[in-house]
Length: 506
Image (cartoon, rainbow, N blue to C red):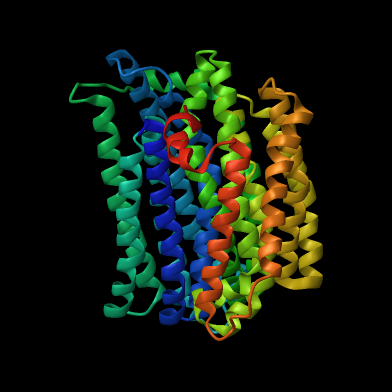
């Protein structure tokens, strides 16, 4: 198995566990702590989402720089100095972040969130502890990005899974045996994040140093960031734009509706993350290759890898996203085991799923664009997205509640996704644009859409046993994917495994 296939498999298992843990633990959190406390946890998830996107500016820069060069001592020393310099900036940002959340906790609880009848003092203390957990989580993304840039994706995902088990599973034992409070919940999160940061840092520094002494001087080596500042600035702007586009709806809901309604929207959004979870492992695995092929001017390999990874991602995410959207109520009921939540979350989830499926189509073009150093295209389309998205959320949410926020997501993605893909393909490749769009975007999407609607229309009535209904959806989606995969890559069924191992990501 090639290294890129190993990395994709590792990323699939890592992201798969993340998604699986969401489905396992959210209903348990709601059952133990209640919907209102889970609403506060949802706010924590929103802040995490903002931090991940804002952080991506420096992390993406580090990932790109560590993907360059070789394993020589000189190359590793240069990478070590870049890592330490970015780490110093992270320390300053995290200190400011923790202080900001700590001192604004009373405002968040008293003015921003509608906490209903939750205890004011306890909730304020929870938000303050939340700030520490957020800061430590912010640090972990830096070291994780470094491992991914070095193509140590098996190690990165193994650590992520172990951390997820400790953080998400262990907190259940903590709240059951110590106390069913938000303070206990967030103290556990902070402690687990601290352990994770220490382990990640030790492993990443060990890989770069290889027991050789390496020195970093603040007054001298911080200047090394001059050579990456343009790219880092572009990525920071992209990250801020992405944070607004991806989190504004949740922030608006958190300030406009009760924490119970925020919890319902978070449940819907969690289900809608499936397409992104599917696309991300592929993007993470191919990004270092994009960088290497571009830096060595191996354009033929670069274009082939982009085309194959884009089509595969589209087939996978569209198969999953469309089938989930058409059957959102059944999946929500089976997942939450709560009829009220599944009814309230079904429509927002369906709309968000289509919107997130469209968003997942952007992932591979996005990574190609930043791999070749083009941030302007993404900044322009992202800015247009903000101009469109914010008024849509405000207006539609006013009239249609959380379903209106979800509809805003869908409309925004419907307009921005095709525009972004067209601009990047036109600028970053030598493909015939019209032919490529028809054959590699419209054609596979048509296959998947028609197939899903066909199986949805002939779906048998299985109300007495919803599990059979879910199995029907899963099997039909798999059939649609395999059929479309065979048609798009023009291979025989018996040669599928051989093609994936030797040719798909060659």
